[in-house]
Image (cartoon, rainbow, N blue to C red):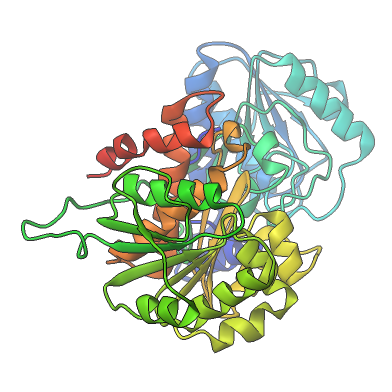
Length: 467
């Protein structure tokens, strides 16, 4: 799927508030609905390529947008039939229905066409579709060569992507004014198709955004290995995982990467440190040239691992915590992070996240925001990656390569993040967003069926795209 980069994301309530502000500023609702319908008609005409169009219109404002779109499509010479699911309620939707003078049939009697526009239900749906409606909608989507949903596919929860009977196979969704969480989360990933965004003149807050390609800089003229970013990786029971992370940090642009007790293997550029004891390690970790300490990949969960984690939390350097370090924090995460003396990034997958913060019925964005209130920037991994910080900033990445679901790719991500943290120059949530984008784009360059070592080989090419 394709998602607009750097696009604002709003909840249903935030979208209603933004619309209310536009109305309060003197813009009539009819005018806003007309803008939305024109945007839908423009995209529908582009995809229809002269084919006959079936427009589905529901009883709410989504249906009002559909009637406007149908009117403009017909004015452009396209054969249009509107299938209506009930009469619109009073107001703008009813006014737009009154302006439709073309062919109109009940939704239950709709015949399939090769181009379909779904305007039954959009933002704000909170209950399941009637079974007969859901079945009919699915049949019409399946019979179409191309289907375009207005704002959201009918039957998809706006804020949490709850599946209320949304059809499978929607080709594209045209988001109106801003993206909604459902475009990027859970069932929405499989139900929205390619997502497009139409600006219809509604200013929205931009605290939540999709991740865009980062802007990176080449090293300064007077750069040296320490100013380029010094990453210290603490290895543990399975040093191979830590080496993957260290190699990823090197390939992401860090100037100096060192491993503590990593077994001596790896590229010659990787420095190996063998402290005499824990006091020696603590002294080395106090080096102010260190831009990031990474701990967790392959760390293990034994007494030595606990000792290393304690030392990392006390070292005063920026920390990236992954893998076993997260499991060691467990449900004691809030207290232990509160004792840390440095900025912290957590990179949990779903299982690690639940081990720290418990299970919840809340959506992934809200769970990640709640977790970030403990004082860390949280990069909550998965097919829908959510990044949040304590200030309420959110970044979402969807549609990453499914081939990333293989051992070691999370270690690579933690190494990329450590390199970005060590280089610095941006706030915490943007550094995490940069790492997530680099990771996902590198997987695209690597193609199918790669393993984590091969993923690292493509990192320099990804960095080059961002210069």
